Length: 291
Image (cartoon, rainbow, N blue to C red; front, side, top):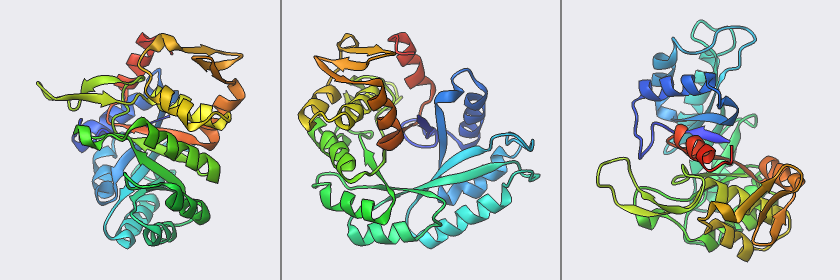
């Protein structure tokens, strides 16, 4: 569920710190919550070099699963991905790691088509859509191209955060067109609240969405509830307002998504979220009693 982005703000860790953390999380008690390691395409070679002592070499070991951020020259990013995967195959002396997905920011339909065509079909492609516009036309193009969508739900300044209605509209439009998506930025807390924008002393604070808000909103939309309900749950900050039950799913203020809807939403709609911290979202969820 959690794609680890330790290289990115606000954590901004070194490659060695990020690789060491990812290795620790893969071995830890909460490893079933860990998704892919997020790495820029132009730093794949560096990752291979730094992580070499940590990468698995046993024939039956699971590889490090990576998602690459591509920007600028997509042909160069493609070449970097192919070279990395060829050098990190199972049984390689370099250790086993595999780029499974690529994430690319796009601005229009032409860039959607170009990005979707730039990489081999076996890779999952996530296209990050621009903020502040009707997502319908671009998500329709994403669906036609057979790729995934990506939404940025925050950043290191207040103006980077969209409103709940915009996020709900994005989710609903993805559901309408059968598009799977991931989210990133500002989601390292379970529930919406006022949090520091960075880890620096004296950092400004801002309202941030919680990843649980996002996932429940997706489940509600998948269950047939409307955008208004989804926007309401995106703005929810009281943990007591969300009730989970192994048999009945989740309930919020009389609205419910059953267990089947939760499973389907995770498999077919909201796939994962990126976070520069892995421990923070897990620890806070446990403190709130959700784990």
